[in-house]
Amino acid sequence: MRLRRPSGATGSGQAGTRHRISHLINTLARLRALAAHGFRILSLRALSDPTYLAFSDWLFAVGVAVESLLPEGWGVHVVGDLAKL
Image (cartoon, rainbow, N blue to C red; front, side, top):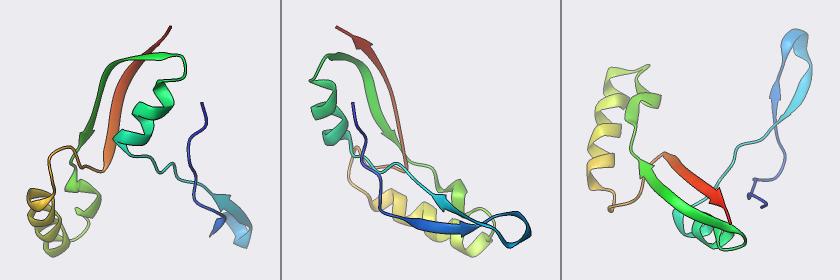
């Protein structure tokens, strides 16, 4: 099972060193398609979570407002349980 990753962002490490930063980017539909290759989905859902903007009261309020407008099934985190067939 291969997950999609964006290409080569870099970040600064300790003492000015550089290292690759990689974030997984997947949708529920993509994970369902990947699971069809040998896995049974026990549960899979997206969770909204505006707390990643909690460092600023204003941004947190905007995040809460935006998340309330997102379609059902959209969220920052994808959580699931899959079982190998």
